[in-house]
Length: 204
Image: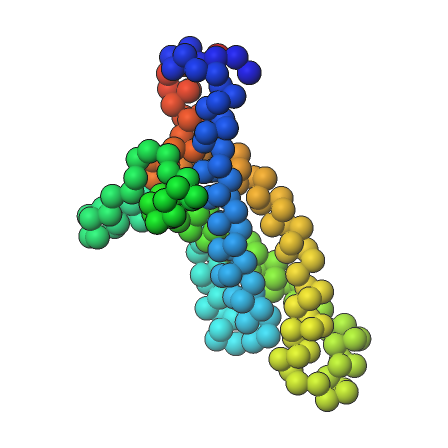
């Protein structure tokens, strides 16, 4: 890959040093999207056209419309001005100092995870609504199974297949598309390195 013109170091070493931070942010974002998006989509599907459904759809559309870098800037401003938050500015890996590492990566992971969770919630809602009208779901209910068992064993298990597929695609997109969020939080990942390289015209 050549050597950096300004830093005079192999680009391969730069990528190997910063890639774990970006990968950790992407993985945490996917986990957050599951923790938030799947329950919201499931509740929205079960309580269709009721108050929980309206509220969940409102927040889903809201977070789909808000740019991730804007949310990142708001979180940074609130954290710095209100809570005097000072994240570490150097690379700290999870196995070296877990607390310092999470202070650096949780913010961008939350911002990216909420954005992915909005899509996950919409997808979970649509797939659950499809599965709820399948014959095997009606048969399970006719057998007298509890509604929680029907939802957990039959509805959710089959409805999550498209969600898992989307999460794999989103993971790849987050690995390469977290430039603005990393720059907003000043995280020393691949996105920040790319911004610095473009600003310095460090092509090689």
